[in-house]
Length: 462
Image (tube, rainbow, N blue to C red):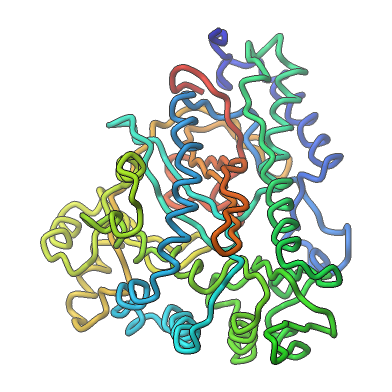
């Protein structure tokens, strides 16, 4: 049964919209849909102080149900692909060999990876919590992948809460909106992430062992990499001890950016953990599979066949690949300089705010060509995806703004394997991020976007 035509934000009565915003902000405070306020110096140091509601869209973004199902079906395929690629150490080392010459961060990660190869280190229990990000291209109506995140896949908790917020608002204001709350998909990302960590702990099979989270310095009650280096050790049998406690699982909420390694202590801690028998989420191999360069290599002809045997799965993967190119391709670089609006220049960085667009893209490519050598190897080129813009209300700091927006869908995946036994290989929830259509970047934490959820429909409207 199809839903009735929804009331668009621009059609809503201003007083009703204002009331919805107040109710939504109150709901956020009551249910923990909050983040630290960067303007408050006490935020992150005094528990419960300096919190504001997370930025959110007042109503969910509409997405065709067929596209939603396609994205969900891809999750276990990508999960398995990451695992298979991670086992091919030579492929990772060779694919990133030029990148490491010009990118010190990638070089340091590869050095740890190389040391694990040299000692024939095996990860019998492998845990991955991933997020594959997509946009719906307006010209082709195709779901195209932006990137695959294999470390610190953010917002599973807040993403679930936004889904609940939207269900609540639709229930409360259904008489105005002509929407059905059942069309907002269930989102259990946070509980499924927790379950995956718990089951990895169970597979480790040491009752007294703990799960350790690696975080950035401003977070509390967990360990930073420098703290692990100071109080951690690996016993002869491979057991990781931190503060005298055996560690079963290490979950990296940090470690994806050079800023997380300000000294040699952090790199020593990363190596220490990698040498241990603890389950890493992610291992150094899983981490490297998520680099932009590996994404581009996998899109080359005949490369997927190296890792995936099922032809139907290969076809599904290729269908969602956007155009991806190495800057060794002189023709595509020339085209990008001539038509920079059709491309995105991506460095080997995570965390938002790193991609290069438009005139800056052209200038960067020209500069890199003049520099010569391996400078181009620090980047890849990607086809720019153009989603259809629609009208929405975005709420940040209690203030609601109406504007034209585009959305990005992230599908979470969980993968747990113990030797030959696949314990978990599931799609586990989603993250919807929405930004004004004039913005290039899309990170919520970086300040470019707001959190959103989905409303499944037969056609793409908001």
